[in-house]
Amino acid sequence: MFGFNKKRRTAAARHILVADEALCQELKDKIDAGADFAEVAKEHSTCPSSAKGGDLGTFRERAMVKEFNDVVFSAELHQVHGPVQTKFGYHLIEITKRSN
Image (cartoon, rainbow, N blue to C red):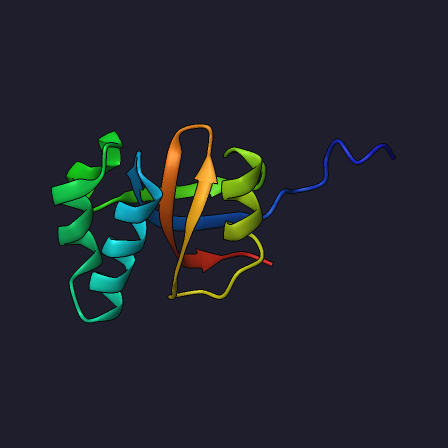
């Protein structure tokens, strides 16, 4: 009746988090040129997920900050998006799956 039981969509993604927009763009350019996303994440990301190649696993819609959520639940799958600025810094985001 009030939407409390409405199931939220889910997605799985991986990301790279850095403090600087220029570095974020530089890393995206490297990935676009063929560098491995997971290796770049392990080397450069400041998020604890870097140990897993940036893998965030599966999460529900609105579980992440708005700017991150907006990309994950609207952008194309299997492409690197960003730089995306949040209060945490600048992200490169790859959505690996999403429910409808």
